[in-house]
Image 1: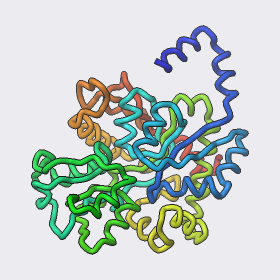
Image 2: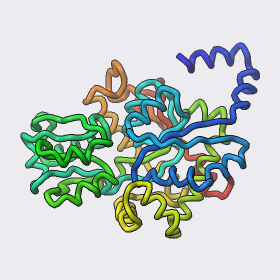
Image 3: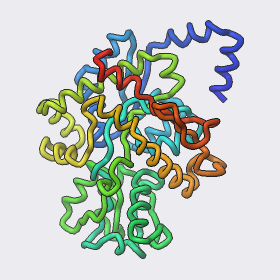
Length: 349
């Protein structure tokens, strides 16, 4: 509705809309605790965001939200201009809900950070007949589905899936009635410290499918490209520090995530971070991404969360850097845009 209203206004007001849009100088992005998103907290605390925002004459507020799904919901509702999220959750919540969303920074893919953990040993087949606690309809749910499918099981073979907030996951595992959980780091590392915890499947078994991204509102980015430039510039300044092993920066991120330097480095070891923007561009331009997004869309449709009344897995259109589309080209609501990352790779920011 908002997009249609703005388009109608543009037809009648022309340059007035552009002038108004360009006057905007304040933006907000949300992030939540995860090994690959800890740089956002450091970008804020270190003053690096302020430096890049000042370069472009804007202000960017970076806000930590303790509940991951809530951060995406708030972005979808318009409280934020950007949010750190996975490809799957962004497709189902904002994009599926009609909010045109752009993948601005492809930060990493999970390469072991998301895991299925059981008590007292076992394997994927042993999940049959057990309840599993996870953040329902998140990437944890997706990982579970992929794992079950690999051994010929389905969700119907479980005793049920119990929706559990990431904020409550560690405490839940400690209770007697919880037998298995699916979650992400740093929660995985903490839970695996328990002597009765066993990891039976993780995201390294499906490399490149759980992608961690800073998404921004497409319309906001189009009207305010300096917002995108400032975010990308700040991000890759910190990526350079991390790639160089800057101990102060890494320690700050470790402590903010509730661990020490060694613990954080262990989490990074199971994260395929794109420290070099050229590597992120190459990943986003790889045809394999299209196959992944089709797989994700099929999962979301099967769960009934690809968008209200979605008639098929092709309901939401996703565009890629080469101009191609998966899903409905008439309903594009997610866009992989490498232009800003390419500017960082070219030293043009």
